[in-house]
Every structure is written in C-alpha cells, then in structure tokens.
Image (cartoon, rainbow, N blue to C red; front, top):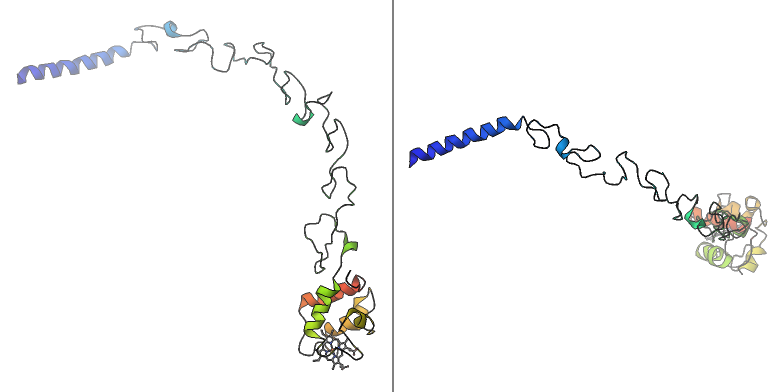
Length: 234
Ligand code: HEC
C-alpha cells in the first residue's frame, strides 16, 4: 500500500517536469513548434478577436461621424457632424459660428457691465464705498460715492446724546437737535477740518468730551457727515 503510493507520487512529479519541458517548444497559440499564426486575428494580434475596440479597421482608424472609417469627422458642440459651432449657446443661430450676446442675440454685441447688468452703462451700481458712511458697501463694483451719506438722527445725534448733550443741551454750543447743532456756528459745511465741531473731538483744545476722546468710528462719522454736507435725515 505505502510503496505504490510512493510510485504514483514520483511518476506525477516526473510527468509534471516533462510537461514543463515540452511547453517551451510551444508558440503563443499553444501549438508545438508553431509560429503564432494559428490564433492571430486579422489585425495581427495574437489571440485577438478582430478589430481593436474603438477602431474601425486594423490601421487604428476611428469611425467618423459621417460613417466613413478614418474620415476624421467629429460632431461639433451642437451635435452637427463636421460642424463648426463655437458655443453650444449658438446652436440655433442661423450661423452657429456667431456667439449669442447676453441679450440672447446671435452675433449681438451686448455685454454685461460692471454692475452686472446686461447691456448696462455702468450707471446702475448704487451705493457707497467710503467706509464709515451709513451705506458703505464693500460689495460695490463701482463706487458711487455721491450717494454716500451719514444719517444724522441715527448716527450723529446718537453720538451727541451719548457723549455731549449732558453739557451741551443748551447754551452757545447746543447739540440737542439738528436745528440747534447747525446753528451753533461750529460747522463749515463740506469742510470737516475747518469745523470747530470736528477740531475739538479730534484733540484740539478744549478737547471734547472732557472725559476722554470718542472712538475712531464716531470721530470718522462726524467728519464724514460734515464732508457729505451736514445734512438732516430724510
Ligand atoms: C462734561 C461736560 C461736557 C461734555 C460731556 C462735552 N462738553 Fe463740549 N464743552 C464743555 C465746556 C465746559 C465747554 C466750554 C469750554 C471752553 O470753552 O474751554 C465746551 C466747549 C465745546 C465746544 C466749543 C469749543 C470752542 O472753543 O470753540 C464744542 C464745539 C464742544 N464743546 C463740543 C462738544 C462735543 C461734540 C461733545 C461731545 C462729543 C462735548 N462737547 C462734550 C463741556 C462739555
């Protein structure tokens, strides 16, 4: 029993090495002494299955959109075979080479202006880019600084009420209302640096308020309010 088992094992090892020895004489098609021709496809590819994927012949040509192998014709952006469209937005223009403008006109010249308006003349950006003013907007593309304002009631009178009117609720310098402020002879309209109001909050003697200076933002608001015309709230 044990002996015949050993014989079988030795024979198997021998057969295996013989097979290995013969394999080296086979071609890629598995034919002993062959030249690969038995399994070569029309394109000369061993074990190939004809024309390579994506190609229409053995020359490596692609099928054109006109149905001709290797014509090189392709669909354009509008899906037209061998077309010359320049943009998919132009597909229904008479001439697909014309680009549609922002109004949708084929070959038109309307563009989007700096305010983001199609065919605009840059006049519709409103707002103000002077920081410190009440309608400051960092998002404006065009600064329309003529529209800048500082609102008297909410910005200026509030500063006066918080820091000045306890002492200036009457007398020569009366800061209790727009009317009184403008008539206190401390403002040169449009000219902050020559206005007494600005000079005293900027540190000129007597520095106001006596308890210590206003914060920079309040000083700047008062300066801008005078600069913009010292106007009353609407
Ligand atoms: C604690 C009281 C007090 C407060 C608060 C105060 N002032 Fe005065 N202010 C005075 C006095 C007192 C004078 C007059 C002092 C002088 O002439 O030396 C004066 C004078 C002034 C003058 C005239 C200065 C000149 O010589 O032309 C202006 C303008 C003025 N204050 C503005 C302000 C403003 C604006 C605030 C608030 C931001 C303010 N004051 C807050 C007491 C105060």
